[in-house]
Amino acid sequence: MYHRLFSEGQQIVPNLSEVYELALAFYESQLLTNEELLKRSAYFAKIDDAVTNHFMICTGDPVRLPKSSSSRLKSFFQKNQFRTGYATHGLFPYRGKFHPQMVKGIINVMGLKPGETVLDPMMGSGTVLIEASVMGIKSIGLDASPFCRFMTKTKLDALLMPLEPLQNALENYQILFEYFSGAVGLAKPGSKQRSRLSTKPANTLHETDAAYEICDDAYLTAVGSNHSFVRNFLLLAYLDSAGYSERSQRKSPLEQFRDILERYKFVVEKIQKVIQNIGMEIVPAAPIEGDARTLPIADRSIHGILFSPPYSFAIDYVKNDAFHLNCMGIDIPPLKNRMVGLRGKTLREKYNHYVEDMDKVLAECARVLRQGRFCTLIIGTNDNQLSKALGQPKESVKGLDQVMITLASGHGFTLFRTLSRQISGIANTMRHEHIVILQRD
Image 1 (tube, rainbow, N blue to C red):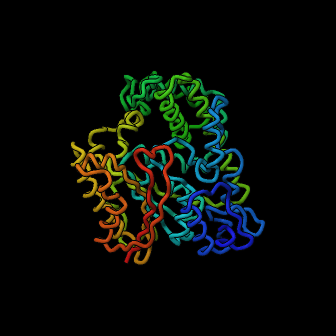
Image 2 (cartoon, one colour):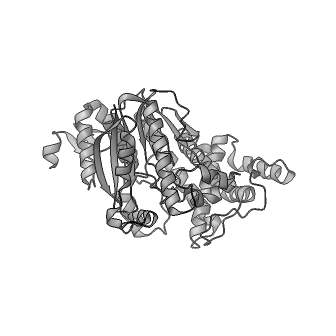
Image 3 (cartoon, helix red, strand yellow):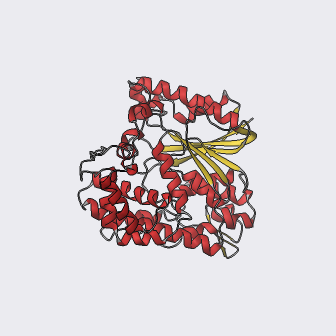
């Protein structure tokens, strides 16, 4: 199969195991020149003995794992070395994000070129924007959650941020831990709760009382920089460590913070070294807090759209991010009412609102997308949840991919191609998700 699909001199990356991966690799080989394959491909390691940028970005250890990490976790990162965890994608383990390698491949298959703009109207952790930036493609991302905007911008800034403050921070991690725990709250180990335990007001990062002025002085001494993007990077590391502490008591919150900070520093140093060595240009991206149902974007100004909408109400993102949102001073109930998939009281109401909202999202996608260009959705169906919501046998539940195709057809989209990929780890609730490629008529 390999020799039938690819020409001599085209060497794919290791561990490709699914049909959709071979399909995307084949499409890349047909649509990109050899020079483009070297610079932008997602599934090739070498072209005529020259190493691709993707191989350079992913080679070596993907992340700095703690010595106590299980063999299963180490095996996962080794097996998925070229799929996920590279660049700054590995900063913060956000639920529901998709494989960066797949995103890169889809961007290529959609025909996007440097200088053009890709849109992710539900950007989540910013995977599309990060991939576009390293591929030389402009990007715009929106999300209703302020935390998603904060997380995405921090990951983008980390591609080019100065490294010296990170070394200072690691050497003075105890001071920083006291600063952030005092400013935004301390997680309760093993609580598995997303609640802010600090008694300070939610905007304490901007406190001006004497106690926090002293704390700010301590922060400056520890880090040696007051750049907002450095502080945001360190805050993201702290929130990440708080999440681990909430789920596990194996380490103290202080130890978790030190380990996470060390891993973050490793990730940034690695990708910046590659960027410098291969002369990669990082194209600015625009992460925005906004509503996908009313995009603040001009008609016919976007060259491609790629996103993964919520799988109905499969994940309560507000509940999952409550600790982080509280730390940012966000009023959670109003936010929940704005989030697609979370509106409504009963499961049936949630589903009906979801379909109504996604119809508006697809209408907006059709408005901003240029004619003849592509809009791709990655979506799966939780049959058990929808069976309960709709009062139907699981076998007769209509997949969300089919629901999206039907909705999109009412807004000038034609189904161009679908690909299916397996989901590991949650086969009892969702076995596959679908790559749905739509073309604007």
